[in-house]
Image (cartoon, rainbow, N blue to C red):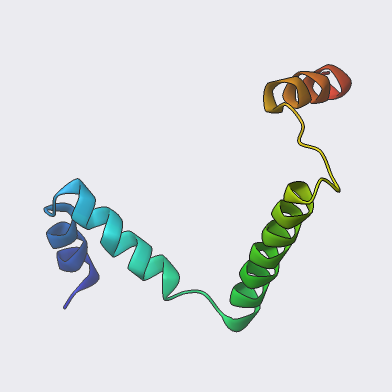
Length: 75
């Protein structure tokens, strides 16, 4: 099927179905390195959450961190 026809047909799908299709297409582009990086970040997130739950690290207030970041790096 010609890619122009395929795109036209895909655009006729409801938004939710287009999102699912887009996710599947993007996922098909992932290579092994990308999957390894994603797995490493997932492990890091789990490790940080476990450390937080054990009381080894504290949480920071998101809006406060963003204010400080903007103040420090504003031009």
